[in-house]
Image (tube, rainbow, N blue to C red; front, side):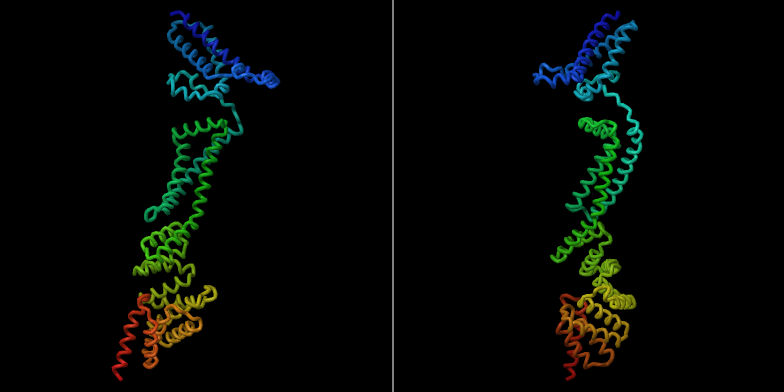
Length: 439
């Protein structure tokens, strides 16, 4: 086959390219622009502007040239030189073409063969030595930031999901997970990279800045997650408040869940540990309560120290209770003990000494507790020192004094709020009945 068809295709291609170049030169020529500015505004149809139709004409003409080349048995060097020259002109104007259309969209619509490079024509990237030399650094920043982000997401999510997610936990976990997956997908997956590039292209952002922008997004994600991680103690405080409200309302199941979430978010929240210990003690889970009180006592919470010492006494660990109580009373100023707490500590110390059969010391501490409740007008748990003092006096053969204390014990006892006082009241009633029978 002769190259007559090829010559016709080249002529069409040449005409389309020349029209394209003329239009682009006219729209970018400084003299043309100055002239336009000096003249009244022309109607849109008079101005020469590059259109999609012109670009498509160039591309389809180039398709025809390629088809003719494939069908031509012998091709002259002159024809090939002409094609190469026209291709060069087309490539030189790739930047202007890119401002009008996205050739990627046309690839989807027309599905040209892979060898048809003109359908995927992109502006030649100019070398920016300074920026390009740092691309490896920004890529490393992106990968490092994403690695840190994934670690933070795992840590934060595991804390929120303890005991099953609630509304706040589910929102926090889903938000951070989605942001991390979107950022990671844009950096690590082919589909994500293509979508990311498409967005940047649509925003007319130069390609030389893409690595920096990607690193910036990754760093912002890390900063956001670090901020969330730092704010976990404040979120834990809110869960602690919710748990305490549940506790006061008698919703102990919800109280336990919220206390546990608070502790998981902030293991150093000793107030949450103390309140969870109170809840476990109400539920008669004394081993669990003791563990929580021990943690809270390390932060010198006076009520936690008092409750822990009481559990030591119930567990017959009197030396541990005595040591803890004496140390707390010695540090009264440091711990800033309230009258009610000091009264409870003195009562428990007297109780521990009583169980150690050290009756004189037991009586001394119990009398000190009784004096304090009278001087400071303590109204809580005022029967317990009298019940214990009666037992100390009995052990020292002071029956008359013991009977008086047993009477006071019964008078102020509240067995509904203290399981300890229930057994003491029974003993008091027995002693008073024996006394009546002896009359």
